[in-house]
Image (cartoon, rainbow, N blue to C red; front, top):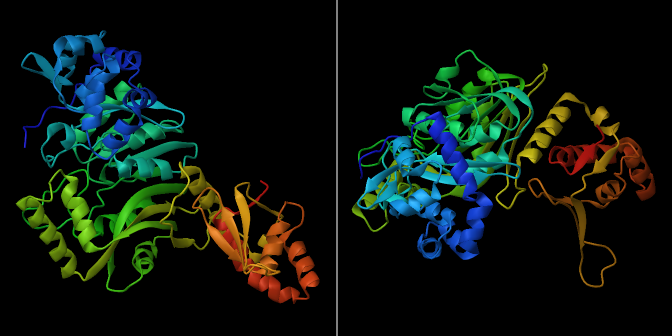
Length: 504
């Protein structure tokens, strides 16, 4: 492995000049996508660099030089680098610490690339990836934009709050998103190297964060926030020799203890009504249901919990994923040793599968029984998912605070993205299956009985649920009380997942 470089300097004047050069070069998400084209962009997303190298080598555009330098890790001629960074210049880039000289040219010391969402354009600096260094990662590697960080950003609800915490900020990806709807952002990390990158990225993007060093919640003892987001070190890693412990993914505890402890302790740092959003892995032992394990973490915390399991891997799949993650190739002895260590570690606890999911917790704002909703959604979901998460938390909160009579007194509407599907045998008069399907959110499809299909058809905000069910019972010659009793759990499910909404 190569010797570590120092993170870029947070020099205000030099960073302002760098920002101007990146913007002037069109070094943006859309600009780079247009430069590379769909083939090279898709290949780069699969960690294949050759198509991007071919495209950028044939281009004289400043953005092509910047991609070669800061994404692909190629050496760039000084004159080319200077042309791509006309305000900063090579001298300024050297002083800032984002490049070093190598022969007649320069090479990058960090990964620096554009990043954004629907409404924002940013730049994010981090350590060079193994694609650029052609070597396995160092254990103190500061990760840039990855699948976990973009998943968390997509799923995070974004209420307007005064104070938010980015727990384990890394290079600051989540903190960038928080700045769009939070007045004061606190970001913590145990890695001083990560905090140095976060400091640089805040300056590069013209934002302010309060950065604190320390492990997990230690730096914010006795403080509370309206929103906490975290991409914690959730990876379950063997504690034996020969398996590198990467700071960005490994919390130093056995099994899924890091995530379990976070679930149990994070409520002390939430304001009433405050939400915590983070990713996690959990072990599934034997033929046990994953819900029982996660429910055990939540029980007794006093927190509302909505946990969505997105994927499940067996121990071998999990070992393969994370043994490769640091840049170790499957043909090496190091990979084989790590693979075996993972399998032995899981076997020692009887682990048969590992779940991955998104954990949403809320501190109730009123005295009531917390809701706990543990469900699976392994298919496609809305992007971004955050608005649906916030709506789901609000809906579940309303349900927890209101009785069945309150539910029946509301005039519900089918959400705008809801459609009905009817499936039947050829020549049959009546459908055998009626589905209410959600276009956004979790993409739920709920099978309805004939009475509930009739109920959904009149959910237009006019009749209350009680009025509608009474009319349907009379029309179908059913017991009013029995129909209401069977309908209430279904209505609650449809409200929780956003298929039915009410006028605020």
